[in-house]
Picture 1 (cartoon, rainbow, N blue to C red):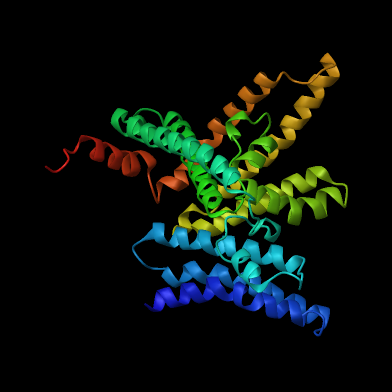
Picture 2: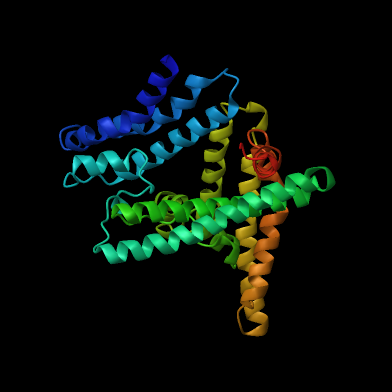
Length: 333
């Protein structure tokens, strides 16, 4: 019970204090307000440490993910506070409403017919993608892919994450649509990405937009240093992922920074190769070739990320094994 109270207190701090900080901004000196806002943003990061030492590493990681999400939401809100926003809307934005930007919170979909149209299409798409993802996990488990090839195992799991994540995204948008709200997509068909940057803008739209607003814009655009801005974005992303794993598995320190560092270098190298190709041929790289090269790079580096994921949940052994068990077990009479 003590753990639950500590976790909820850490995660709920920004939602409780942010409206007060917005009002206090005009009364406190800038330096004091900035310090207070910084503390409010960092409090959610303490949530997973309430579970440190327990025998449930997956639970620690899930709480760390929640803490990271709330922290990012708090930074986005406190960076540009607006007193005109309704307190309920601010509270939703700083908890677990499915978007990181407050302007995406509580947008209504007019008309029941439009809501049903959005919900029905996404519901069908989400169900198909989740079913395919679960089927792939079962295939990977039944064929023993992990024992045969580390790269094939990692590549297959990357595809499963894409299908399961994209399917969950569609189901979320469908549920919000039925409730009368427009949901912000987190996945936009990353399998069709034509560059590393395009892949990450499609794979996790929420994080991409947040990093673009708070990291790339100040460095890459305002200071006119796009290469430095891109490297900073992938460095921050790597550090955020390191935080997710650190409370549960300190020995994995460095793996996520390596993965995202490679993708940062790959993004810059890919842009350079694209410019060289255009200078030589006078036209852009053919889209099918660009998509194939991007997908190959992502799958080649996927085992680094999957190695960390396997520590907490093995998509083949755990999820795939469960699917096989449910499919093989006879139903009770």
